[in-house]
Length: 155
Image (cartoon, rainbow, N blue to C red; front, side, top):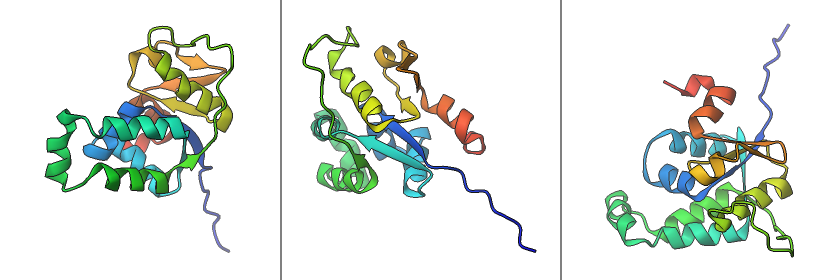
């Protein structure tokens, strides 16, 4: 008699830009999230606007020495991201009232989370983290997410 292997259900998530930068450029907890996505354990959801922001941030002067150390270009990383994510077309509400008053550019992560019906928004941005949740979607740090869903990855 064969024993059944329980497979964990794919967990849909949204990362904010700082999570992407951290995971793409350093081997840390954010990097572990990227490995989970590669292994098909999480589904990373993204909107084109979020990809554009990531693309812009990767051109910042302060990141160029790290890209050079890794022998990567921003194009290499964007190509990797496009292959890793599920893209969602996000329609922004016409009223234009920001959700994140202190940083309205963060609203795209919330709208993407609703559109993609994710389980978590994973962030290191205090403006997002201060909300704690949006439409019953928890906004959590990487550590909190990993402790909740993949505790074996926390050392």
